[in-house]
Image 1 (tube, rainbow, N blue to C red):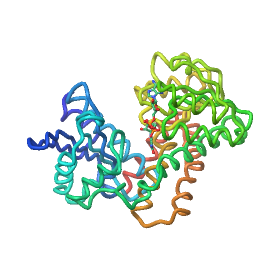
Image 2 (tube, rainbow, N blue to C red; image 1 turned 90 degrees about the vertical axis):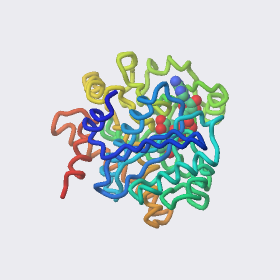
Image 3 (cartoon, helix red, strand yellow; image 1 turned 180 degrees about the vertical axis):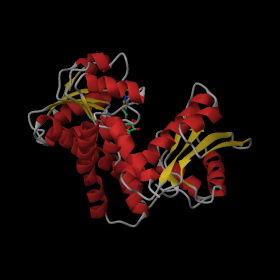
Image 4 (cartoon, helix red, strand yellow; image 1 turned 135 degrees about the vertical axis):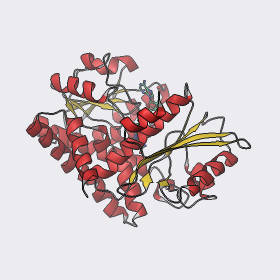
Length: 348
Ligand code: NAD
């Protein structure tokens, strides 16, 4: 990957490469945009196949954060930090403090938080060096799993909006939902769907998580590669990105795709178009999974828990607006959502 070219293609403002010999820190901070406010986005720790993959992941995720914040009119831009390393074996206080010093030098242009592979304790370490970090001890993130809870709640409401739009009713009782990934968000989502009277088909690579969902949600378990071909009303990707691709789209037997995973379409334009051609309604990921960002932004603005919940409830109406726009302009739903975010970004 040519970094300059990729920055230009994705309109990325700044990429900061961070290296510190003593702690062994190797990290990338990508600031996609600060037009609407400081670039907000978590810090991911992951083993990448190459340095290029780490940079590509950081810039793509940062851009997703810009769209998500702009779409919901939040006063933040998009950013992401990526630490290269194994989150189970390579963590140290020195590493996160070193990253904290790099973040501090950005003087508030980037605001970090928890993401894949990082925890509240890691953010506390960053906090020892800079004020520009959230999800530390004392925040909502540190009290139970409020972020995952609100993300799951937003996805559940997004499913209702999608069913309302396509099937004529937002009532999910008697509907069949296939959930891929039963981690923090997927499992909480299963509970909401169970309480709403939906039938569940589930899968995960972790058998213990499958057993837990089967037991508590009366779900039917299937093999990981079988989930795509299950006949259902809604398929909910709640595991990894890139799972809507040339292999999986032809197998789908659902009316709607609505889940929490980020970057679900392997190739945004082409695979969005293919879903459209197959008559499958796709809930754009950065709209339906925005619950976590909405509450983080709201908490930074000092909102109460009730206000935060109301913020997440906007997902229902905003998703309907995306679907109407897509129909009016005969474009795929993902493209309609991007247009709506870009209009907010382009506003003077
Ligand atoms: P998690 O790590 O707790 O759960 C992910 C689950 O997916 C794990 O149980 C894992 O075993 C499973 N999985 C991985 N590969 C799989 C495969 N091939 N088939 C089936 N299952 C597989 O993560 P999470 O916090 O629940 O997040 C789920 C997704 O939602 C991620 O893509 C994340 O980026 C996105 N998301 C999460 C939040 C949040 O608040 N946690 C907010 C927005 C978006």
